[in-house]
Image (cartoon, rainbow, N blue to C red; front, side):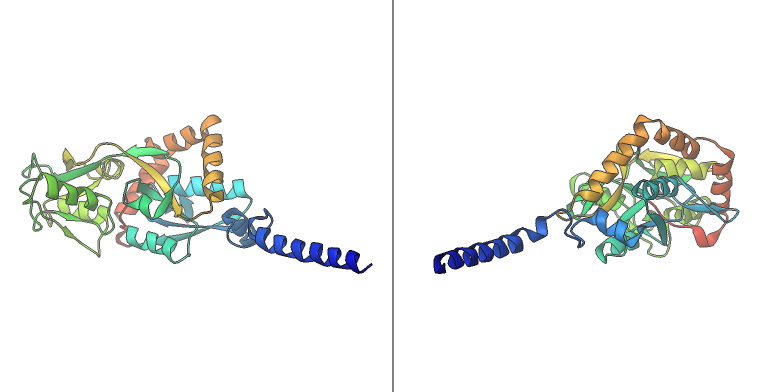
Length: 290
C-alpha cells in the first residue's frame, strides 16, 4: 500500500508541473496573449485615426470615411462595438499603439520598412505615391536637388521623411526640409496655394481630393513609386488579430464589398465631395496622413 501511495503522489506532482508548464499555451488561457479574445472580452475594438475626408470625417453629425466604414465592418465581424479615437497627427497614432491605447491604426497609413520594424501591418487595400506639390503659376521644380528648408515643409510623422533622408544621403546632398509640428498635410497644401509656402509633399490620393476644391494646386514631381496603404497593430508574438484581419479582408474582397466601398470613397460621389469641402473649410479638422 505504501508503494501505491508513492506512485499516486508522484503522478499528482507530475500532473501539477505539466499543467503549470502548459498553462500559457492552452487556447482558453484568458489573458491578453490572445488579442482577439481580449478585444471580445472588452466588447469594443479601439481604433485610432486622423480626421481627413477619406479616413474619418462627419457629415451632418454622422461618421463618414473609408477607414471608418472598414473599421466598423471589422468590429461587426468580431462581434464588438467600435470605439474611434481621432488624433491630430501620425506620430500620435503610433503613440497610441506604443502605450496600449489602440488595437488598430486605420488612417490611410503607408507600409514602409521603418514602420514594420516596430508594428504589424495588415492587408493592403489601396496604394498611393508621394508627390511634391506647388501652386499653378509659380516655379515648378524638376528635381529635389536644390530645395531648401525655407522652401519645403512636411507634416510630422509623414512617411516621406524616410525617403527624403535616403535621397539626401544617396543622391541630393544639398536637399533640406523642415517639419512643421503644428500642421498637417492638408493645411500645408493650403499654405502652398495661399503663397505662404513654396512646396510640400503629400500622398497622391490626398492631393487628388484636395484638387477637387483647390484646382490651383499642381503636382511638380513624384517622390516615390506606388506604396501600399495598410492598417497597423502592435508587433508581438500574438498573431490572432493579424489572422482575423486577413480573413476579414479576404471575405470583403471575394464578395465585392471592398470594391464597392473603395468606389464610394475614391470615386466622385456627392457625399465624398461634401466631406472634402467640410474638411478643407474647417480649420479644426486639418490633419495629416501617410
